[in-house]
Image 1: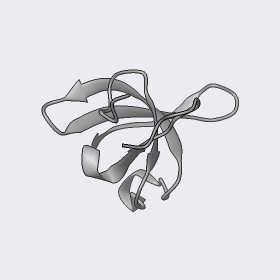
Image 2: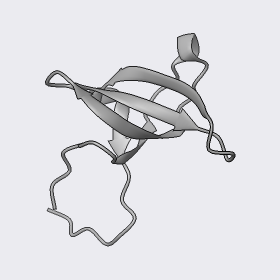
Image 3: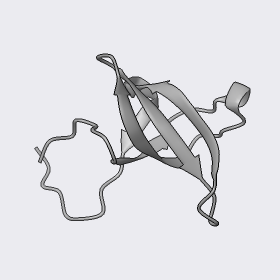
Length: 72
């Protein structure tokens, strides 16, 4: 399985983004790839309403897995 991020993947922030009022560990969904190393990520609350959507560099994201993934 590839660890490359793609559209609709669930990701977590690896650092605080105070300008967007987001903190390390918040979880969002990739909605679009922006160039070679950035993604548009949407963050939603428990009610399903988006509270933030912004472009984030790949280096600031961790891909989350919901099924077994074999280590390389």
